[in-house]
Length: 130
Image (cartoon, rainbow, N blue to C red; front, top):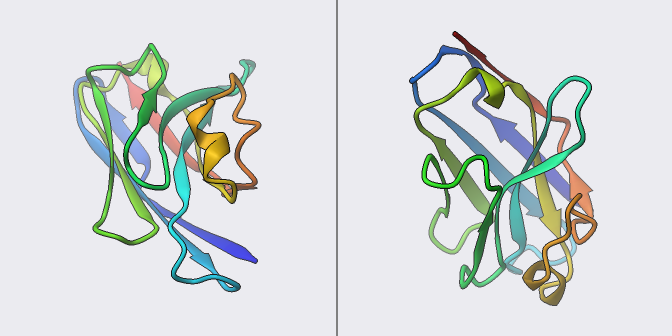
């Protein structure tokens, strides 16, 4: 009952910036705010957290490799989040997945592989050339 619409992604050079966006539509409870964020998976590697934000925007969680370079934000009171990526590196190359959690409380306890998230987008490719 939750649909995800991802946008952004593409091919950039090292040092460039890029912005990803994701909008979640909850057909059953359209006014409910959701915990959301982004994970990524590079070829041959495990899935890793990029950045997530709790339903009330009180907490954000970043992967160690992106701290200080990426910023997640919510657009007003909507279930639309943006991931601003700066100073991109070749190792940021991956498929980026938007995620949504139905349980507000679970997003305060981030897990390694994002078990607290119930919906995953189809993914958008980000490729950073050196």
